[in-house]
Image (cartoon, rainbow, N blue to C red; front, side, top):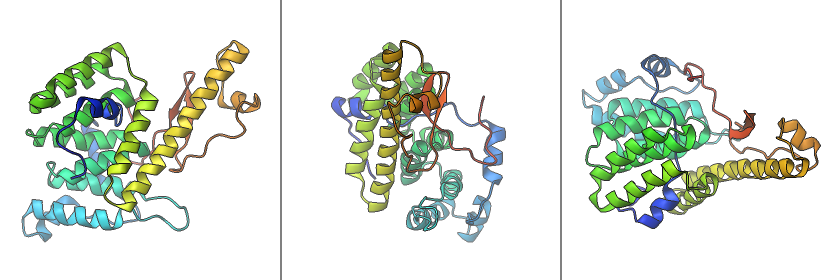
Length: 284
């Protein structure tokens, strides 16, 4: 396991804004997600159970081992990781065994920051419901609800569940829930600190490199927002578009997203672009 089960108040402050997401995927979207297949083969859960002679826990372990061995392979042509394969494989493991510890942790650490936060949250939700003794899935789910969606009520609910499962951290969870409501955190800097913390704890080079890509991606977002603030101070007007920022000379080029997903300027704010995945309907 990659994270200590005991989280101090100080670490919670760093961890707090790390992962995030909106509400769980709708049933219709979930079914389409399961049906979608790409270039790499991910055997359906029922077939894997049959191959494992009816042992779904064994099947989940085998698929997780395969995922760990091949999931982080970088395409030599594009220089990217096959995100669609990761999505399908993590989802199948969750279907086989929603309690699987490595699956929920890695799915969240890798997928959420690649723009697939809805899918990561789907896996976290299942893990939270299954692992009633473990506060971490609910804790991460609470972060996701706040950071990616800004759903304060859902975040506070998840943190309350996490606190009930971890008496030694209950008070800290309650304080964070209050601070969420008061919006007393610098989202970007805290999330960046968390990702760096996770990279230091990574036990494999592949995971460390993947987290570094997410660090670089978030740093690009922070730069864009800082330059937007400079623009609006200099010209005394809201930034109308990304092109206006570039044309102003405050930034020469748009930061390169190492994940190849990019950024978007919506309703006057720079955001991490969502990963568009065929077969998954995003709520509008």
